[in-house]
Image (cartoon, rainbow, N blue to C red; front, side):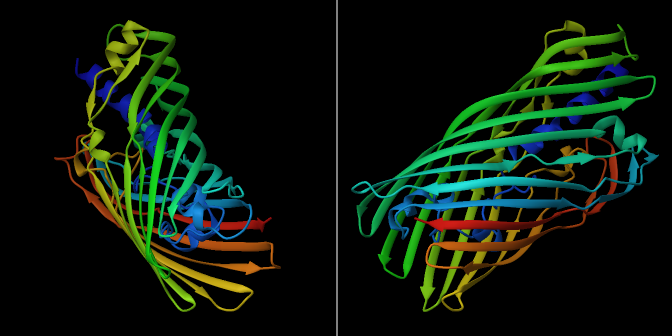
Length: 413
């Protein structure tokens, strides 16, 4: 019974790593920077959204974006440095470093010409995914590898109620697929794959009490990700044992709702935006798997308490029009982690973060622009104790974080 319980918790933790990346809606590997301007401003880019990417960040602002039709296409490079852990797990020495990882994420944004008071937009982004790999034995038994891709197609619409007030809305189509691996010699092996397509919505409202000031509210709905797929492997502990299994299985986790309040004001050639973001992670109370094979389900299907917390993120961004050719940007954000000490594990060793960024837009001519930006996500050092940690982790996680760079082209038709 003890072996079965431990194994069950181990495999649940393994799959959590992929799902933590899927959810991608708070500090837990969120990728909100889906354009040059957003990255350069540490995502303090909602009330001030004024280009093709307004279709994604604030569709209400599409009513006021200059130009007939607009397009932005770009590529983001993400580098994940190693995470260092120094400590023990259940009393066993477990010092280890995760592997460094690199990714390329393409995206595009489009805003149509105006049709009376209406305007339409379309964005294709990869707002979450990433990966984490550990090759040391202690970490490997819970989180040898996971990889996950999340693609979002977001058609949007705006309506200008008056020169001072605009509203927007969109439909979110989310596709994700992932792979999870874990292995412990002479005990078990697990290879899981799964995917899902889900639908949500987003809403936006912008108000301009004066030409220099914009106040905005945006909301992205909760989406329950019902991943379905298959699992293969063996179980050589507990009773009954399975020399080989191949079964269907799945799990449902919430992609939590997000509320953003933003204000932007222009002082001459400089715009300052401040932003507050609330992510409703408290919807993530349990992680509950199901498997068609009754033996596998009995071992791995026990619900696990997660009890994540709602998070606050605070952002500020400054945009300065240097001259007719160059626009310069910089930003800062403080991002809370949703993961409590009790349930943190090697699959997602998250911590509060300080985010620093900068970038520039070069206007090549009246219609064509080129942009580039860079962002550094600095995770704070985090020490975990057992108890209360339910995975037996006693030690300190440090380094990690992320470095992002971006290049883009934009065109106004």
